Length: 112
Length: 114
Image (cartoon, rainbow over all chains, first blue to last red; front, side):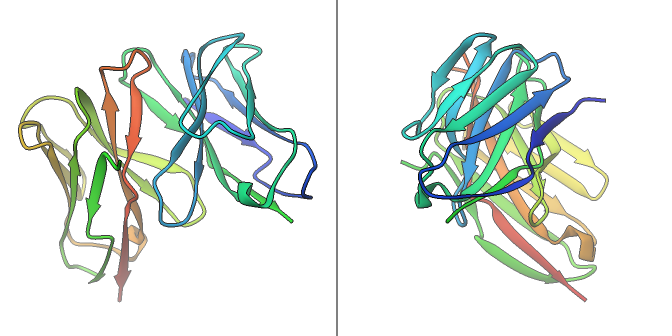
């Protein structure tokens, strides 16, 4: 069964701390994405990757880094968490033919 | 600039009623259009995907249409249930991008009341 698993599902971090959000997919998809969702807005693209060991900047990459150590895993890293990064983060995977798109259940990050 | 506009922003219907959600987009060139359902605090679940001009799809009580010329899609929900309460998100895949870029609408919040 196709799946995108995010961990943790929720996290409280302190301002200035480091946060790592993890994403694992079992879909054999090449493309993986990290989005953030803020109330009243559509999902916005932070980073994406289309092959292991390579990542690309999305629309709002500032303050975030990404890592794709393998096809299955894609991490989002906040080196110095800030209050403005409080949001729900979604990971997604997609096949190259655009026939399948799967989302994780989201990670609710609260920076205090 | 917002490339995917959804309307209405929110909608309240009584259980058993039908409703129609709209999606207009300016993504060029477009590819697939997908509708997702997002329950409060949950992830996005795919309802349907529309690929071709004048595509129509049906998935139980959900049906959708796509007019590529008008860059417009509708999602129809018939005989709504309380469990239909959720945010419905329209997503357009940009085939002009090698990444098959996804463009998201802000969603329509549907509330079904008894």
